[in-house]
Length: 440
Image (cartoon, rainbow, N blue to C red; front, top):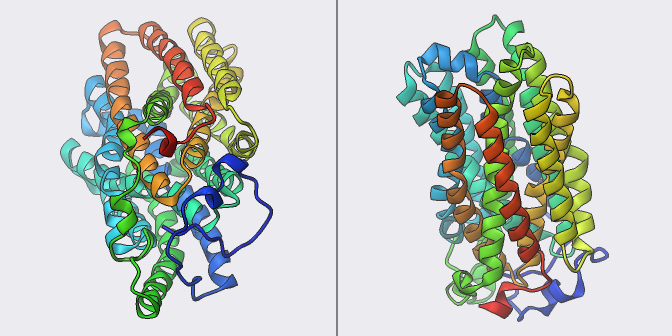
């Protein structure tokens, strides 16, 4: 995968991990659209990121209504909140192969179509099985896009990895918090049906399809031009095979890759428990449903500014361990507050958990920093996210089971706080200044 940027600017990536240090890749012509395509890519990244969480947080805000409407038990609801990381793990593995065959932009475009279709169909499901199937369709699209976002950033903006990661991480946090904040009032304004409140978010996904359709078409044209100009393999963003992908680093042999996968998985565990159960925690403590949704939105909206700042700061540090520790301590304080005074300090706990959830953009940034080449980023992104999401699957299920059988939130919150400790340890190891190419 070539790493030549077509938007030259001052590098913000440390010298040790700049793409220029990697072996030279086969030359590929710049995108045929020039400046307009560069701008369209930025718009496409933002719109795609806005769609990567509303399918989840809109459900979290209406989980009680969905459980009642579909006659779900607490354990089944726990399974429902575990579907996202399971889909991300299983289908994220297919993203690099699909990107090599059809082109990264085409796969992201298909992902946006899947999100829109799943969110349109889900509200009309007549039972739990249909609801889960439609949710899974949307989550497949999210899974593919999750893995390819760092790859596309590395491909098109190799000298601005921190900045562009911050931009789409900020958009992701904005979409997450927006769905959490307005789903309940929007549902009430549209007649009070949870089905309408969930289905309306498909409109945002439809909007994201438009720029990615144009980007995918341009990349196919560029790939044809490259094939005619020289007999070189296409890149991971072109619709044919990539020879370098077959000779890339063996990620599973890298200790840093495993540490990053564990860090990613443990932060994802906390994030999906929070997105799925935090409104219910507040509602059970006596907070009104609308306020509980806003509190979740506060947690999510903390990622809007921090998701832009943290990657930029992390990109300038040789070791990201100090950031990992600060985020972990914020999570421990938030869970302790929910255990001792869930109502009195509700807004503070929401803020602290929001700071803790910014481990996600930090993990994405480290994926781009822990590999020198585009091929390395593809493999590391798929490995860290897929293994990480597999690690996160049992968490929401266990929380749902503990909630149902204990009748309260003491045991689930104690578990959530305990998981912060290994998360911090794995993040410190993953934050060391080294690359998977050196280790594998």
